[in-house]
Length: 438
Image (tube, rainbow, N blue to C red):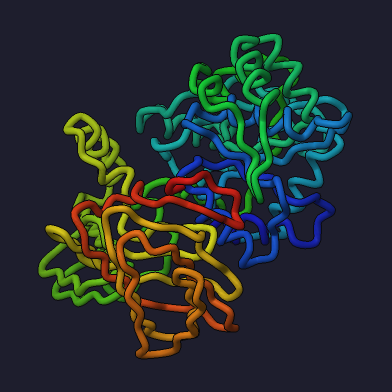
């Protein structure tokens, strides 16, 4: 979906995208952008912690206005689907002169149903070609109220997409939430560029109030305008919305992966790495991943947030730690683990290299599944191909590189008294990472 969001701008005169994401997602985002050749050094802005959209966009605007620049910022979410790219681009072009004139433009989706899961925008007087002043932003309504909004023709769904000049947003934020802007300025003042990433001061940013752009600015400013959009838009922020969007079989099911069904209707079933079978199931979401399984009524799947809250309260780490972990050189999948051993499947992209490192508490065995591995072990270089293996003793200085043209896949078996990711002493790293796992 991140790739699709980027591709949505093809043919329009936009600069390199600036992506804002959490620190933990940085390598996944970089990998996605590299796949569509949309990555440039310093164009992934990392949030040390989630503080909602107003601080995130403040960081983006401050970054964009460095060195005297003052571009227009088109703010898009990566979890939207838009079927009609041409209509979307037409709406953006209609909004450009408004933003250039100083307006803070949002895009309102022409509603097709009495939807209770979206916020609404109440249109005010017409103010330009197809654009309207914003009369009010409205919270997610009850079904009866949503129906009245639909019947009136005066309301649009709040898409959460915006277009404004960077300096104008900062001016309005200074007026209505100077506390947020002050913290973001301090956090950006000591920002550092690390490879593709811009890192702000974590301690300062974490002190920032958490607030949405709607509450912080858009509901207060008299400069807000809305451009209606009818482009087959869907906010795929929940599994129920995903079912609405994806093609269905003859029983109304959306099935992905290894799935078998019997007398099952209107379900979303996604299997990542195991067989999932349903019998007599209706209107249900079943999501099987390497980490966990979710089963919920389709109209209540968004309540998974309550499970995340329970995980945090119980001190569990499933909401933070995942089997498949992305790194700048590729990714690894933790296949199995037990007392004193751990098994990983490691994938190294062509031309990439892991850091030169050693471990104090574990030895490792590497078995090449496909591709070619160049292994440095205590000063000696070994070239390994399919079905070949090598043993790395405790304390050995080693590195792994893929010199080939195809991904390198290998199985790593770790054995030792401690197998944590922080048992890595980095001696050399082309990605500028600290001498510990990051």
